[in-house]
Length: 262
Image (tube, rainbow, N blue to C red; front, side, top):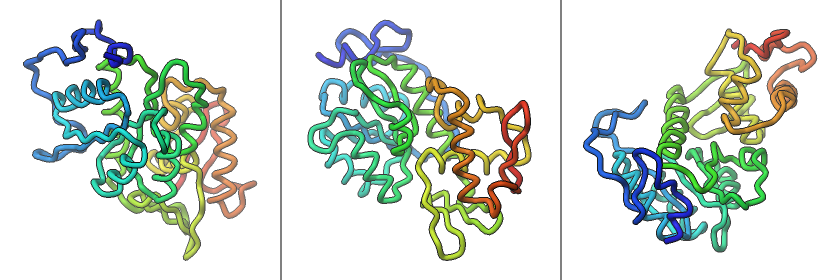
């Protein structure tokens, strides 16, 4: 089975050699932001049948509802139709690959969180994945606990967007539609710029270090220098501030990072 190469079978709470999850008597905890009786749906898009089945069994064991797709185009269409809570998308897919799935979903203003699955040998640009709209990525082979932890973290961030409309001066941020407007004009943001803006909005009037911003917006495994944050803040100011040279909302805290004032 190919999935044995992709899923760590040795970690505690992981998988047996046959790819089946270890039995557990533990009761899955209620996930943050999930009301009692509300079952979250995860769509797994991967052409490796063994891996699909293994991951699906593991997720169902954790209390999620799981749907699967073997091709990018089918997964894209199922996302539009089923509106799952989260996508697991393999980078290498027949037809429409994982990058195209992300790009087309974001172009269609679909806000569903996306975790990309990539092989060790894939030449991926981690910045590119996040720029095209992926919320996180996992490199194969991965452990069961790592995948579950990342899924919960991404869903937690998604659930924190409970306030659907937020404001920056006269700018309106529609979190549900991932649309930012000034009056009747829509302001275009890259996914990373948008995620940074939302993170600042959700943490007003407090100093945020560059490391905090990197971890929240780009992920713990992302290894850029802090200029990544500075470059994106500069672009953000150009789009939301009346005078980017004299910002009123996204302020620099010297020696620390940034602070957002509503």
